Image 1 (spheres, rainbow, N blue to C red):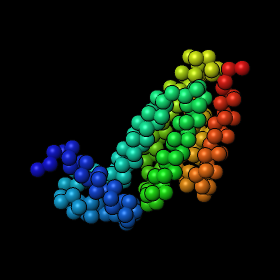
Image 2 (image 1 turned 90 degrees about the vertical axis):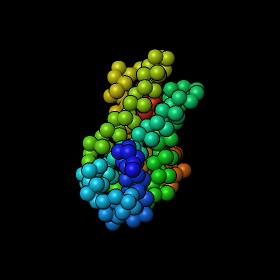
Image 3 (image 1 turned 30 degrees about the vertical axis):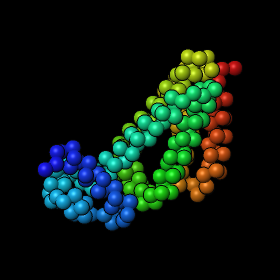
Length: 195
C-alpha cells in the first residue's frame, strides 16, 4: 500500500504522461486513476478536480524552473548586468524547449493562465525574487542605482515576459528570440546602471 506522498506522486506522474500524450482537454480523471491502479473516488481525495491537478503540475514545473534560475544566478559572471541577462536567456531557453518538446503543454498553460491566475502569479513572483536578488547584489556593488529593487525586478520581468514560454506570444525561432531578449535586457540595464 502506498503512502499519501507516494500516491500523490503517482497521480502527478500519470497526469503528466496523459497530458503530454493526449492534452489536457482529452485526458480524463478516470484514465489517470486507472493508470495509478486506484479508483476515481480515491483520486479525487488527492485532487478535487482535473484543474487542481494541472495547477499542481504547473506549480511544480515552475518551482523546478526557479531552482534552475537560482543555479544560473549562482554562477560567476563579470557583472550583475551579465547575471540579469543570463537569467532572462536561461528562462527563455528552458521555456522554449519545454513547449517544443511538449506541445500539448500550451493548452494546459492557457487553461491555468485563465482559470488559476493565482498559480501563474505565484510563479511570476517566485521567479521575480531571483531577479530582485541579483539587482540587490548590483546595488551593493555600486553597479546599479535602483531605489526600489522589487519594483525594478517587476518592471524588468514585465518587459521580458515575451521571452517566457515565447511560443504563446511569437513564432520566432530560438536564435531570433535570444537576440531580441539580449537587446531588451541591455536596454533595460542601461537605465539602472550607475553613471
